[in-house]
Image (cartoon, rainbow, N blue to C red; front, top):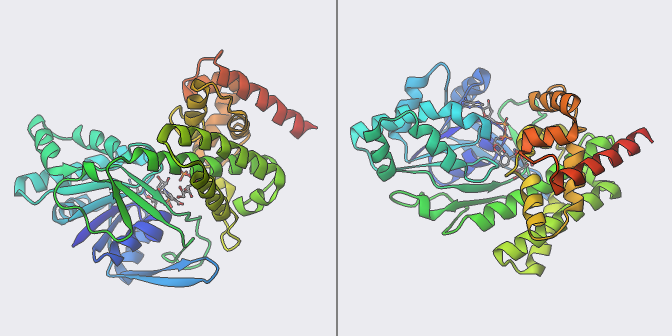
Amino acid sequence: MQAVHFGAGNIGRGFIGAQLSRSGYQVCFVDVQAPLVEALRERDSYTVQLLGEEPSAVRVSGVTAFNSQTEPERVAEAIAAADLVTTAVGPHVLKAIASLIAEGIKLRLKRKTPPLNVVACENMLQGSTLLKKEVAAHLSATEQAELADRVGFPDAAVDRIVPVQSGTDLLEVAVEPFYEWVIDRTGIKGEVPPVKGVTYVDDLTPYIERKLYTVNTGHAVCAYTGRILGYETIQQAIKDSRVAEIVSGALEETGALLVAKHDFDKGEHQAYIQRMLDRFRNPHLTDPVARVGRSPLRKLKRTDRLVGPALQLIEEGITPEHLATGIAAAFFFDEPEDPEAVELQQILDRDGVAGALQIVADLPRDSQLTRLVVQRYQRWQEKIEG
Ligand SMILES: NC(=O)c1ccc[n+]([C@@H]2O[C@H](COP(=O)([O-])OP(=O)(O)OC[C@H]3O[C@@H](n4cnc5c(N)ncnc54)[C@H](O)[C@@H]3O)[C@@H](O)[C@H]2O)c1
Ligand SMILES: O=P(O)(O)OC[C@@H](O)[C@@H](O)[C@H](O)[C@H](O)CO
C-alpha cells in the first residue's frame, strides 16, 4: 500500500506519517522545504520520541519524499499510484496544493485506477470538503463528475500535540504519547483505508467540535493570556492560576455548549476537559505560545475555536465571559515573525478592536460579543498599564 502525505512538518512526521507507516503504507512525503525532502529521501527513516511518563521511541522506516515545487510531475505520478492521500500543511495552504492533487487525480481518471480517498488533517471544520472544492476548480465538468464518483474527501479530526522541534536532527520529532484520529466513514469511496488507530464514524461533527472547541480553544486561550502575562511556553503559562482559571472557564463554557448540542454525558465531558488540561501540563513538552497562538487571523475567524463557540453560546442565551477574555487577549499577540499577527496589529492600530472584529470575524460593531470583547480588551490594557 502506498500513501502520499502533504506536509512533512511536526504533525506530518510526528503522527500521520508514523501512523500510516505502522499500518503498512509506504509513505511518500511532499513538502516545499528542500533540506527536509532531501533528508527524508536520503535517510528513508526517522525517529519519533514519545515524551510521556515513560519516554520511548518509534522508528519510522521506508519513507521517501518529493518537493512539490520542483518535482510536480513526480508528485502527480505518486498520487496516481497511491491508495491514500493525506495532508497536514495548514488550512491556508490547501488551496496551494489543490492543483497538484488535481494533476494526480487526472492521471487516475485516465488510467481508471481504483477509488482514492484524500484526507485533510488540518485543525478546521470540513477541511477535506474545502480541499475537494479547491481540487474540483482545476478539473473539467466531466472530470468533476468522475471525481464525485471515484474520489472520497472524508473530513477528519486529528489530535496529538507536536511542538516546534528543538533537537539537532532535522527529521527526529518529539511528540506527546496521546493521539486521536477520527474520520467520517460516510465520505469514503471504495474500501475503508486500514489505518491503525483511526476511528471511523458516521457523524464527525461531535468529534471535530469536541476537539476544536476543547483542545484548540483551551490552547489558544492559554497561549494568548499566557503571552500577556509574560510566559514563553504553554507549560509555564498553565501553571499560573490566573491563566488556568481563564482557560478552565473557557472550557466550562464550550463544554456547556458541546454537552447541550451533542448530548454528551456531562461527567464524561468534564473528565475529557481534565485530560486535555493534563496534556497542556505535560512537563516533558516545551510548546511555545508563539506556535500555539500562531495565525491569529485564522483563529479569530467566525467559525473557528474562539468566536465560533462564543457566538453559539450567545444564541443560547449564555454570556461567554471567559471566551471573550481569551478573544480580547488575542489582540495583544504581537509576534513579529508571524505575518498574521503583524497584520492583526496593523488592523488593530487602524480600526480598533470593534473594527478588527468586524474585519476578521465578520461581527457587527454593535454585536453583544463585540461589546463584551471590547470591555475585556480594556481590562487587559488596564492590567498591563497598571
Ligand atoms: N502540531 C500539532 O500539534 C498539530 C496537531 C493536529 C493538527 N495540526 C494541524 O496540522 C497542520 C500542520 O501543522 P504542523 O504543526 O505540522 O505545522 P508545520 O509547519 O510543522 O508543518 C507544515 C508543513 O507543511 C509544509 N508545506 C507548506 N506549504 C506546502 C506546500 N505548498 N506543499 C507541501 N508542503 C507544504 C511546510 O513546509 C511544513 O513542513 C495544521 O493545519 C495544524 O493545525 C497540528
Ligand atoms: O495548529 P493550530 O495553529 O490550528 O493550533 C495550534 C495548536 O492548538 C494545535 O496545533 C494543537 O497542538 C493540536 O491541534 C493538538 O492536536
